[in-house]
Length: 420
Ligand code: 7TS
Figure 1 (cartoon, protein in one colour):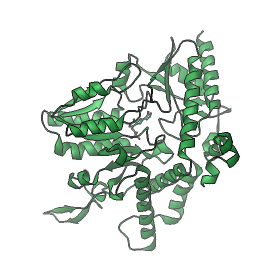
Figure 2 (cartoon, protein in one colour):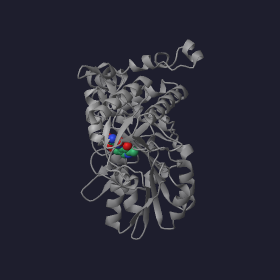
Figure 3 (cartoon, rainbow, N blue to C red):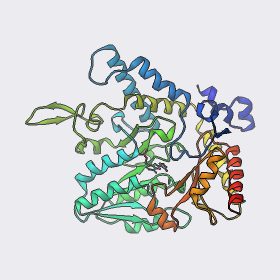
């Protein structure tokens, strides 16, 4: 597969990523909307799926479908192998030390809720603190708020600067002896800011706090190495990294998972049950009650294979090129203000147009076949910090091109005309 996806040797010499070849793996990119070619720039909400992922789902249901960890029959064993094989792929993708550190969940939201309801409930008490940053998605705010309310603990927020950068020194000052947990995003879904996770982890660990990293927006773009980051928990959503919806991952360090209480009770998370006493299974099964999203996990495995088939450095260079091109092109539009100008930035372009509501921008662009998102992006406290109610947001993926940016810019000129 890699030969199909990476550059041909001629292109390699020319330093050119074979984007057209890559785009052909995504059938939806050939679709038209309102008779116009689709320009899909809503990848931070969800990415499109390569044929390999679509095929993996169809193949699982056509050839392998059975429940896992239960049956002794042929298909049950095959399905179990596929499911556990997907776990091993995630382990390699994250460079986790053990496959048992990979828990399949519905997505980042469920992963964070799981940690709040298990590790959090066991370790955060009255007057303790959970620390987050001002740029978190609601799913990395609300679960901690719920925990803190229940426990009488405090949720405290580390500030950011106007560029949307994490203020490490300010953050450091705020970490105290009662800080039990730090939960920060690796990449902001609104600003694209890439946070200094390794430094954050080192500092938090030195003060005795555990660290959860929300990797929903990082996993599709960055090389993630949980051992190098040193974090205690890491989360991702399959659907944002070319995999199916309804599947995601919680990575947790083995020692922590072993001592954490279970979350949901039910089948597969137990070793034995009697009415008097239930003995829980070991991780990861302790946290995977009930029949998991088997096909989803297999599809996520296929997405990881797809990403592994791309040469990471070439892909990163391509994404950085389109982002830089986008930043430059948007700066040429009169009255446009880019929101999120962090030095370290991944594939998100949030912006405002003077006097035009972001929803109007998105609606007019939509008629041109251009999909972006407008709104608060599930980060209302961040909007408040930025002093805006909403932004327009174009977000990129591996298949985004300079032509997509050109279409966006042309569309924004049309928006300006409508409001002139
Ligand atoms: N964390 C971050 C940083 C996110 O961007 C999102 C989803 C989530 C958590 C939640 O992920 P889920 O898969 O559990 O829903 N972000 C967005 C977005 O920016 N637009 O739509 C969803």
